[in-house]
Image 1 (tube, rainbow, N blue to C red):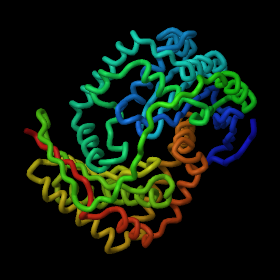
Image 2 (spheres, rainbow, N blue to C red):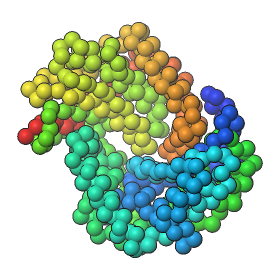
Image 3 (tube, rainbow, N blue to C red):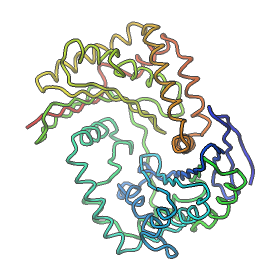
Image 4 (tube, one colour):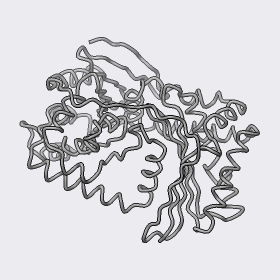
Length: 423
């Protein structure tokens, strides 16, 4: 094994170690509290699913916890909980990750079980059928959530070719036809050392962390090759893509607008969109909140969100309002975007947005769990060092640069919009 890089964090120093078989270990020693966090990130999100297997990555996340030939179902949870720990997992487009928090003294007892279920998932047929019903119920539950429906509909409208437009959960009819063997194939294709990063942050010395990972993450299944996945670049929007939805039990109107931005390879442009999102709708003095909620009282609330992903980013603006105000509010949002393109933001606005985002960044590095997630996410979509560049890029932005970013990405004539009304 070879130490390939070191990078300094805001609080301490983290080491990136590449093991001989390809797995990456990121370690940071934090002796202040006797806690250890292990976060295992795998490049096995839904964007890598073959088109006939939509929802497989998320379904596999559930099945990982159903054990192996050595660890029967529910034993993993019993081991972790009996040692005072907690564990969970999540799946998105670019990754699946599994995290464990425990007292550092119990890490040698619990980490082997996490490694075992990740590397050697058995995916037994009876558990597969049982857990599929759980996933199907999750899909039905989300389908009753207007916020989930609105965002999913918006993404399907924005991403008509790229996998980012798919539902991470998959679809009921397709899930009914999946087999355990297909899932085993997906697992053995992607849960391989070259696709895996193990992050350990807490009261564990580097030598001990390296020894634990080297010992427990060594016996991988022979790789398989599941059906190929075609990832197409999404062409630029040329007009307004509009979706109208009428939902029962909806008590107010909802409006969600979205724009596609650059992927992580253009991090500076992404940071610019993050600043613009903050200027538009973060706090009472932001442009949209001040005009639409505080002054004209046209909305109950309005917010903007920015999400950085591997292939492209997503900026959304959402509002909750009376249905009769939908058309007017959309027009006023478009006018605010045009103002961003015509005139640079004020120095006061820019300074406030920089301060908010840099403070949020600092707050996101306070705990071992947050640091482990930050390192793992960036290492999975690009490289861990990029997470350290974020505050410096934010601080360096000028008003003229932000104006250029707004002109390039936030068109008032090219976007997707989902409008929901009570029926």
